[in-house]
Amino acid sequence: MKVPRHWRETPQRYRMEAGKCSKCGSIQFPGRVICPDCGATEMETVKLSGKGELASYTVIRVAPTGFTDLAPYAVGVVQLEEGMRVMGQVVDCDPDNLKIGDRLTTQFRRINEEGKTGMILYGFKFVPDLGL
Amino acid sequence: MKEVAVIGIGMIDWGELWEKSLRTIAVEAALKCFADAGVDKVDTITIGCMSGGLFNNQEHLGSIVPDYLGQRFVPATRVESACASGGLAVRSAFLEVASGMAEYALAIGVEKMTDVDGGEATFALATAADQDYEAFHGITFPGLYAMMANAHMFKYGTTLEQLAQPSVKNHFNGSMNPHAQYPFKVSLEQVMNSTKVADPLRLLHCSPITDGAAAVLLAPVEKAKEMNKPYVVITGVGHASDTIALAQRQDLYSLKAVEVAAQRALKMSGKTIKDVDFAEVHDCFSIAELMVMEAIGVVEPGQSGAAVMNGLTALDGDFPINPSGGLKSKGHPVGATGVAQVCEAVSQLRGESGKRQVKNAKTALTQNMGGSGASSVVHILEARS
Ligand SMILES: [Zn+2]
Image 1 (cartoon, protein in one colour):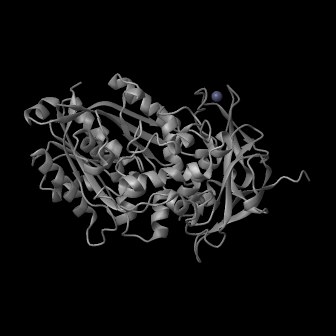
Image 2 (cartoon, chains in turn yellow, orange):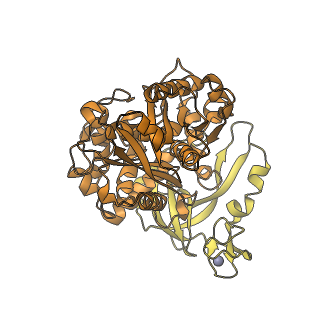
């Protein structure tokens, strides 16, 4: 895959930058040109806390290409403090002991390698929020 | 708007059809449809196919299909809405006839999935999800539906037994379908002990990788009357979209696009779900069938698990679902599924379904779904004589 495919996502993947509607205040991740809630087009960039609660999850046993080394691994949908939900892997825990409602926070991690000569992709993953 | 009838259906045997190509299976289904209708020339063709590009390195089905079907110079359009591409093809053909643009409109659904290995097929299917914000994190399609299953179980107390029962029911029905890829029965224990794929989903909760095609021929109702035999009319068409990413849905335990599409189709036909005798629904995963039951209004939210255990949706139940065997037993060649659902509905409404015939079937609903519920197409069909 071409490099721009990945670097243009850097603000979202590395810094969890979201779009906040200047009119109704709704926050979207990723940011959008048009607010899906009110239709306004004036958006400001805000950085998400990365903290939230596990809304649902699964443990992937049959992994797609590029992720087979990690299996079994957990992927969750997390309800963030800012109000929207975000998908990501849930790591540094026993996937069999995850529960909906678990408190999680984000860390910057390696996500995937695009083969032996491809890029190494980074982004956020969710980890247990120990309140540290 | 003209009233639109289905005057021909064509199904081939589905499975791993290694000796046949994409174009061959599309043509075979269409020729069966032509034979059924007694028609050999059409005004327009719509082809539902999710990814000829990724599965077969073949795009431009709007040329190759009419070319090999003896319909050179006929206008043909390929439509795509992931796994709802087939339903969308029927809807597009409906619009051609209803608007008066065409008299004979052929809809073909086709997918030839075994030309690539399992990893490549998984990748191709995952393009129906949000590539940058879902697939990037290593989620799979079973994984997306598994998250909906966990959310449904958490919200409503749906049990693992209830989650397994649609597969048992659908394989029972499919054991009587000669076109089915896996025409055999499975037990609740077999489903619940099959290989884990994405918790809580196991292999026998998941529809298979399939090669298959199906075709329907639509025409104004006057043409159907001229045939002097029972026919079927499409009285409702509903189509809706939702967020591409599962995370951004209204909630994780319901299918809003399905609900909206079903309401639109029922409203157009002037009916409620109580007027419908049976349904063919998109059970790509067993949890999908449970959530669709709630979305189309067969049961209240949270009641689908208990209802399927009580036999509501069995072949001899009050509201049979997937008499064909569904995606689970019949197979799921993604672009073909929505067209095959209409073929089954028509076969049932004509009383031609043999051992799996639904008794007194007069009105049917078909529900086809793209991605993790990001698009859905619903049709209402009624028997006429
Ligand atoms: Zn807004």
